[in-house]
Image 1 (cartoon, helix red, strand yellow):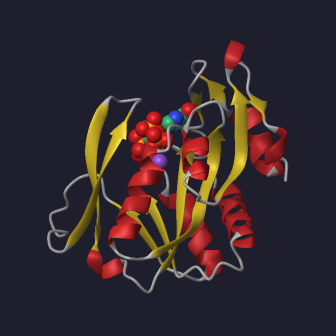
Image 2 (cartoon, rainbow, N blue to C red; image 1 turned 90 degrees about the vertical axis):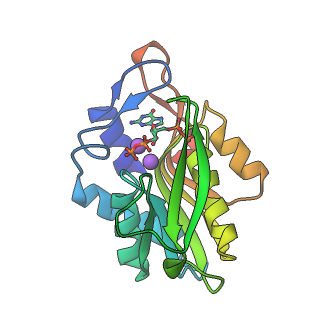
Amino acid sequence: MELLIEKIKNEGIVLSSSVLKVDSFLNHQIDPQLMQEVGKEFAERFADSGITRILTIESSGIAPAVMTGLQLKVPVVFARKRKSLTLVNDLITASVYSFTKQETSEISVSKKYLDEKDKVLIIDDFLANGQAALGLAEIAKKANASIAGIGIVIEKGFQDGGRLLREQGYRVESLAILDSLENGMVSFENSSEK
Ligand code: G4P
Ligand code: NA
Ligand code: NA
């Protein structure tokens, strides 16, 4: 997605050979117009998939997920990372291990908002090792929902998540795929220039 790639080129900050900071439009401040285009792009790519619900994880998945839900006219559910005061009964949970933070966390969704009639599109901001996406897929499976695919705003192609998810048979659509962050520079995979 050209607009997104330009934004990353102009505003992305390479923090290390493995981490890209995009706080000006995705992870802290949000660019609503760009997110709307992101939503349109996911909606187009999954237009014929019969999606009934979007599933994402707080917090940075919510903006692209909502914009996609708006386009597809389906509700958006976000998995919670912390126990909620009001969300206590009938939870579906999964454990997610973060290699980055070296810790496991429980994520949860209420049974009320995901069931066997659903065809789910999983959306997230970044794909690194794929553990968050796998946790969301596990939640969808536990709800007996089917999974149409996984939409990622920025995939780090040099980490394992994309390969892992595709090997498991998931359709993964990434709007920008980073080839490398070596030497303080962002380089993109050609396959992302769709
Ligand atoms: P994984 O799910 O793919 O295995 O990723 P990992 O555990 O490594 O990711 C932990 C957090 O770091 C996630 O956000 C993820 O989106 C984010 N992340 C991973 N790589 C990058 C990167 O290169 N740049 C940026 N900006 N973020 C990255 P989170 O902790 O869940 O936070 P939130 O922003 O969703 O609240
Ligand atoms: Na995320
Ligand atoms: Na994030």
